[in-house]
Length: 416
Ligand code: UTP
Image 1 (cartoon, rainbow, N blue to C red):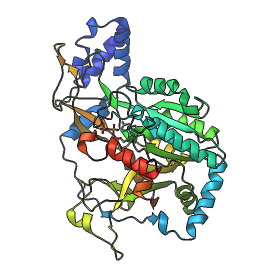
Image 2 (image 1 turned 90 degrees about the horizontal axis):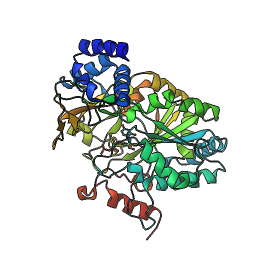
Image 3 (image 1 turned 120 degrees about the horizontal axis):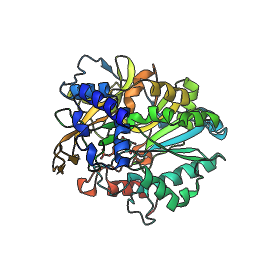
Image 4 (image 1 turned 90 degrees about the vertical axis):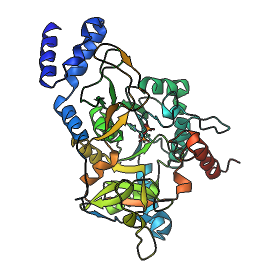
């Protein structure tokens, strides 16, 4: 351990992170070992460059943004049945798996526990996980298959998530047969001086690396390999916080297969031109999502000859990928975006700092940044009231919160 400690000291000195060992001597052997392991795993070049980026204003003004084509699920005419048949066949052949991203911190909702364990207040008191599971089981039954289900957790919430599933007998799924858990990647949090934070436990304060970490972690944890062994060719990836998510959609799948694209995404039309959502577009000729903060009023309001918004297709985290596309996306690093968050940490004198306002940088990759890896993708506009009931905020926000999601869910399933 001593040698290793000397090597580690040299690395930290080189990167100006020597403070990480300030309290090393006070740690027990387990934590000492763990801290050294953590330090050895950190890519300090990357971390320091991420900090440098926080000082730069990232301007995308040179990017050429243009509208992207989409299909409306309810204006497909005869093609609807055609695509549906193609998709149904592939689903029956066991070619579809689903991934639920449940590694987020859910800070806006403020629930004490993984977001998927949240009860949105239906009479059944089912959690988000159970509502999602009901949907995927029901859909699988229609095609005589069990859709393999993969749950992405974070180091922070993995134990609580798996325990919750176990307590609920995995909602009828079989762990390690058709239900798999995998943990997403992490990056250290930093203060505004670029120093990596040490948490209450004396270890490095790590945070999940955003939903864009999905591709790399699916590959690194062996999930894509498992999918291939199971004969899976297509993977639906969605969030845990949309209680109307439709993970099994033969029309979407049929379109992807027929059009020979490797990514097919669902959209819902913006509620109004200035809704604060990211929308699909082409960026420098490649598929992408543009954030509402990046779009001008003029672009937001622009319409086509039929009066449809040119930038009106909201990205709702409902995307279908070929396994190959995931593998390729997982091999290329995505850009990291910085978020300014509250983080409790130990200062250099060993005092615990509990902030009441944001004090630390967290780095996150966004799933849609990988879209530009492909030349073309299919976009299918679906109906908001059928497929999108997000649970983002606490009820006090009044939007995208448990009460709004509950009403949408009840209306869709005619529960009143
Ligand atoms: P959000 O971006 O809404 O984040 O995630 P969040 O963590 O749920 O909530 P806030 O922002 O802290 O309030 C959208 C989806 O992506 C997953 C979330 O679990 C959710 O299903 N996600 C997000 C991850 O799996 N990992 C991450 O690192 C971030």
